[in-house]
Image 1: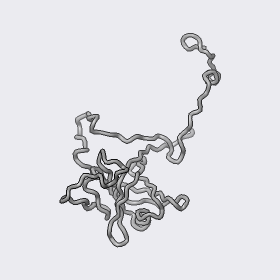
Image 2: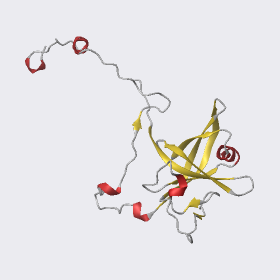
Image 3: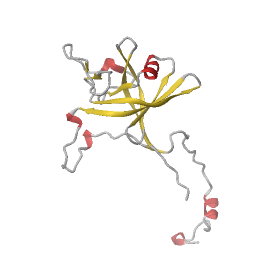
Image 4: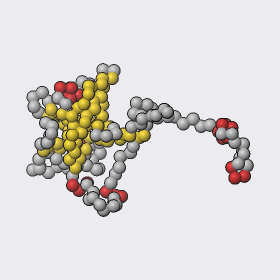
Length: 191
């Protein structure tokens, strides 16, 4: 029996925080890919600070911005009070979490980096701890989800390394011939 394993994935904007050599932290905005299970995959420019940091120190925090914060506007669109702290300490990794992001994923790079054409680096990270704003968590046992409160990710059910199949239109006469039917079909669709 031939079996094909397909992965479900979703791409979402995120703000990544990693640690620099001098102990400071850097923040970068990009899109991450959720793979099936608690693994996040990200493509980074090979010469960028974030890729260099993750090559040496595997800790990273994926901060998912609040609904309505557009990816092209970046961190400048995030709500922030002058006296409110911008970051809060993580529990299992060194980079801090962004306080204004409703979902924060503490993660650690797993495996080796994959460098493509010297320009891009793919890194996968295992999620160790998830922090979610209580307003985004549904109560247990209510049996329902308010439609306006939940925005599910779009899933793509095909192997991530293959391009989408291109549909090839076939004439109805050819499709009928392949199925052993007569074209045009008789009444009730019978041959």
